[in-house]
Structure formats: structure tokens, C-alpha cells
Image (cartoon, rainbow, N blue to C red):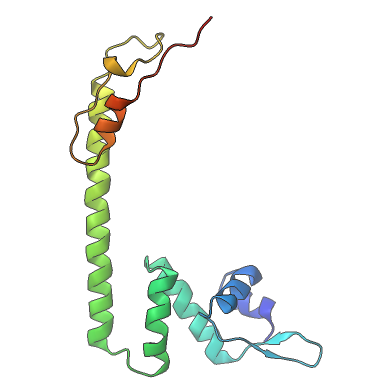
Amino acid sequence: MNISQLARACQTSTDTVRYYEKQGLLAAAARQENGYRSYAPAQVEQLRFIRGAQALGFSLQEIRAILPLLAQGKLDRAEIEQQLQTKMAQIDTHISQLQQLKTELAATFASLRCTPERTLVTEDAVAADSGSGAGAAVRKRSFKPPLP
């Protein structure tokens, strides 16, 4: 199968396939006499694994660490469970950070004291600092109205 057939089979682009090859995630394809890449069925499965892992939130670096285990047949259920639990914990942390940011945005919005027509001056709108640094950054910046 050539590169376009592989890309189509895995619902990705030929550029993505080439990128994965350059990054060492996908084994380099054999070359036909005409120079075209020729992919084996095992590479289809490998590309599907890479794309599936990315869809689950795994980075290419994380996938790169998993691929040798998969190739050696050492990716057992316990290892898969550990990888998934680690990813879920990372996602929980990210959700918590996003919730904190949302709270700070809401506090900043609620603290606006100027009328909508007036140019914002940060002394009029200071967010509570919850530790993320966003509130402190707002307090340190000062927006001045443009000169006429």
C-alpha cells in the first residue's frame, strides 16, 4: 500500500504519515522501484494505534515511550491500566486548573466597575488572586485611554 492509501485507511494526511516517520514513531517504509513508499499491514495498525492514543490525549512523546513496549509484546493490561490512570490524573489536574481560571475570569468580570462605554483602567477592575498569577498580573498592568 502506498502513502496515500495508508493515510486514507487511517483517516489522516500524507503529511502526518511523513511527520510520524521523521519523528521515528512510524517505521520508515520500504521503497518500491519507482521510489514510492510501500507500507505493510503492520504499519497500518501502528499508525492506527498512534492516532488512537493521540485521540485519548497522549502526547507524541508519551506515545514514543509506549511504542517499543507494544512492539516487544510487553504492553500488558497492567501497563495499559497504569498509562490510562496516569493520563486521567493529568486530565483531572488540567480540569482543576481550568476551573480555577474560570473562577478568576468570573471574578474579574464581576469586578468591572466602569460603564461599557468607558475605556478600562485596571484600577477599576482587579481580580482576586487565587494563586495562579492571573489576578496579580491584572493588578500590575494599567491600561490608559488613548490620547485624542
